[in-house]
Length: 239
Image (cartoon, rainbow, N blue to C red; front, top):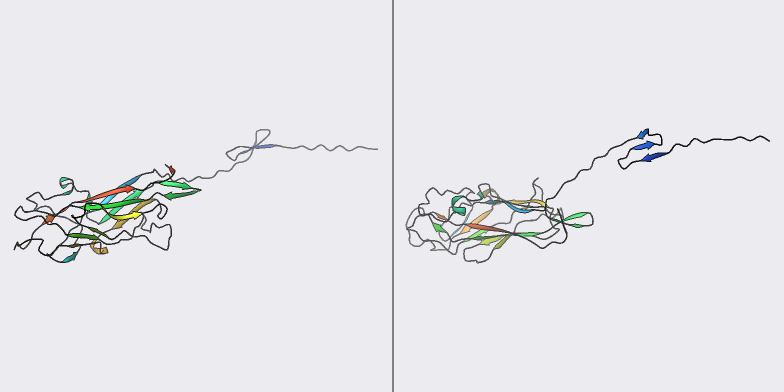
């Protein structure tokens, strides 16, 4: 009886964590690479831009926004100006917040929520012969809230989110919310709106008789808007 012996030459390979396969003798069998793309959210909440407003008002009437460019060249009486003349306001009507704070739910990054409120001062005259005006109303009309690419911020895509209709008056002692967003209803990142004459952004109402008995053809006034950004409580945050 004959016996046939079969010898099997088995080659083993080790696969490293970087995807490289190495044979027992050290020879590289195969190697592949892949790319990991990461966007880091820094966990900030900032108020980036606020608008100036300019009106040609009429005593006892409601008027639309004229522009977002203010002129203080005739302000001889030193009427109130934001930051003593160094206003943070812009002449494009842009109101912008950046919110990259997120809480984690599974693999989803959930926005945290915030409010942006505003409060306005009494209208102060440029000329010391004129009196301040109180009881007026500056109305900010609802505007679409968009991201840096100009798209809606809503996590429920078919349903856009707008700013609130906000009526500001010096007689109000607390802030009036212009933006009020809850956690999860918007995508983290830039949140902006434009309040300009082209978007029907705002209107101003002066009560009848608010300018007194003055017969001057033109009287100029300033008021200061203070914007306050407030975060809403959030759960576990990643940065």
